Length: 116
Image 1 (spheres, one colour):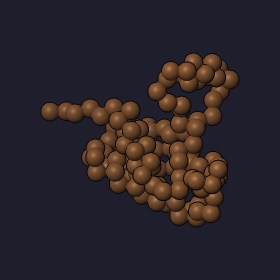
Image 2 (tube, rainbow, N blue to C red; image 1 turned 180 degrees about the vertical axis):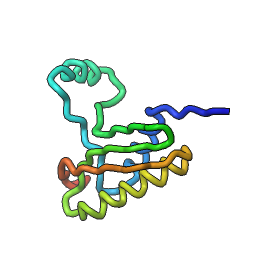
Image 3 (cartoon, rainbow, N blue to C red; image 1 turned 45 degrees about the horizontal axis):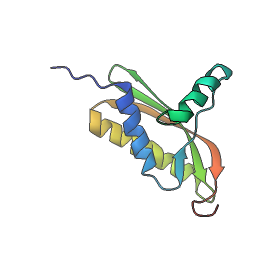
Image 4 (cartoon, rainbow, N blue to C red; image 1 turned 60 degrees about the vertical axis):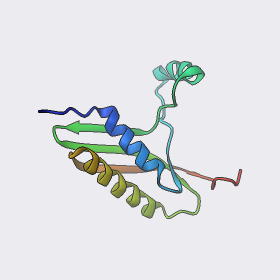
């Protein structure tokens, strides 16, 4: 029996994993001019803003591309590696698929929570 795992499930696994790592957040996606109107309509009643998190799949291989905002004072390389390892482990554990790569790009630095 064949079980199909949708790309949205893979994205949700990656997002949930990243949400559990202290000091980082998935950055909002940058929008092309043609996408601005749709994003504004979704903000009014849509579920959430688009994120810089993309999952692609080629057969049994998965590649994750993610843009992160990292809390000021954190070791950028350290949290990026932690994110890569955690996402790869969770996707492989939960789906049985092979993670080929988790590509992390640090897009910004944020102030620590509670220091607004």
